[in-house]
Amino acid sequence: MITIQAALARKSGSARAFRIEPVGLDAPRPGELLVRIAACGICHTDLGFAGAAGGDGGLPQILGHEGAGIIEQTGARVRGLRPGDHVVLSYQSCGRCAACRRGAPAHCARFWELNFDGERLDGSNAYHGARGHFFGQSSFATHALATPRNAVKVPKTLPLELLAPLGCGFQTGAGTILNSLRVRRGSSVAVFGAGSVGLAAVMAARIARAGVIIAIDLRPARLRLARELGATHALLSNGRLAGALRKILPRGVDYALEITGEPEVLDVAAETLAPGGALANIAVPGADASRLQPGQRMVEIIQGDAIPQVFIPKMIRYYQAGRFPIDRLLRVYPFGEINRAFADSASGRAIKAVLRMA
Ligand SMILES: [Zn+2]
Ligand SMILES: [Zn+2]
Image 1 (cartoon, protein in one colour):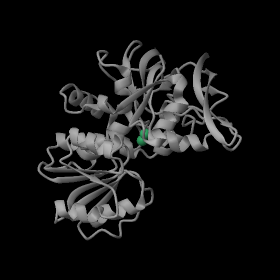
Image 2: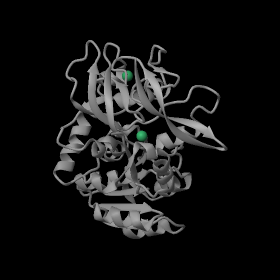
Image 3: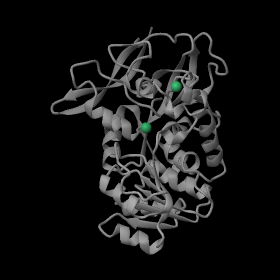
Image 4: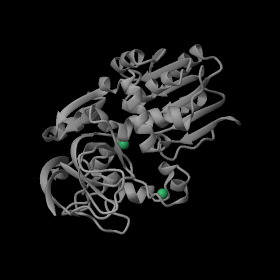
């Protein structure tokens, strides 16, 4: 066992705040890796879980699922990865179910247990006094256990704090465009919500050579950034949004992405969809597609249907070619300032907050 430093959500007064505390972590089992975390992005799912973590008197949970770091130790039977390798950590999948075997790990039959239960599939937990294994990593810590299924080797020449958010948020935005929807050249795309996922989608829509790319948000500064990153149009979200969209695209939009989590925005997206169009629902759980016309479809998106080992290197190549400038979205905080980083993420001050552990 080693002692690591991990951020634990504790109740302080009426609020909940993270405290960085020592936690015991067992050595990697066969098939596992011990990764020294260099940086970890803060993603929307962390915000949701932070409010609830440890709230029922149970063990506090170590969150963080956009980790990146350096492999320190490998358990037995690990192939293809070795100590010293730089890795980006992504979501976990089982590798054995039908979806995993046909190359669709985002639809893994055990996705929920592996990513959210806070323990391994056999019910064990390598962490002492805390629940870990969040997204198969728990990277708000100096070290994490991962496996070759959710660790992707990356070039040592790029800073790990830049690469960390590729594991979830950027993968979801870009993957929705390039994998889930397979946006056609010359088509039209509307991105409802220009946060980190939405801006990654805007950059990917440009890579896909969409003809019209419309970014929609409440914040003018984000719309300006969206224009710089490739949006052809930017619209402030207000009561006249549907009319403004129809003015640009009288037939409607071929592909819409809902990333705001607001059911009313999803309604506007459905209403303004072109015949035969596709609506990617990323943020409204349990939405019903009854507003759609025959021939239109709504797709519920998980991780942009990305296979991390394929898609993360692809995003890195786009970054290196200057076509996916994710550096423009980052705001880096020392690990000790995790509470400020969370507050800035919740308020929208940071588009993509990244914690630097070392
Ligand atoms: Zn995430
Ligand atoms: Zn599976």
